[in-house]
Image (cartoon, rainbow, N blue to C red; front, side):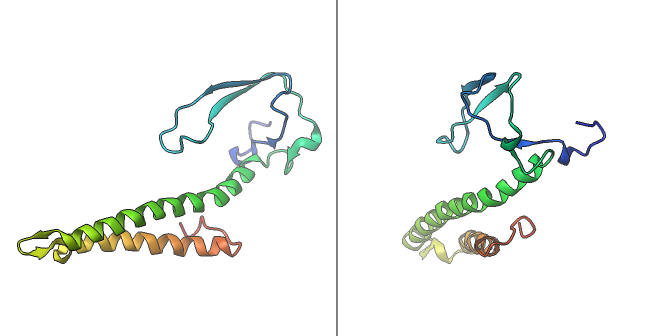
Length: 142
């Protein structure tokens, strides 16, 4: 590519068979979060990419990658909110059962603040995801 081309137009997305000559798969990386994801490096040496395997045209790879993030990020956020909701449910239950100074800890201001902050995160994520569910973009809202 031309060195004067903007970075956002310097990548090309394509599809090739993993068994194509010149493709070497690297070792599986250890992920911090999504351990089920099979993440590894790939080396391409003199791999031939047929013109019909180029996605969106030459230089459209960055745009395609960003579009993929638009699709994959909301479910990740929703999963995190689900985990947070369960933690909130357990914390609420405990805060109603456990007493300090003769009153449930749910009545203490600091506990109320923590519980309400988690509830806010839950609803904020729903607010962000709603346009996505209707076919809109989420990156502006986030």
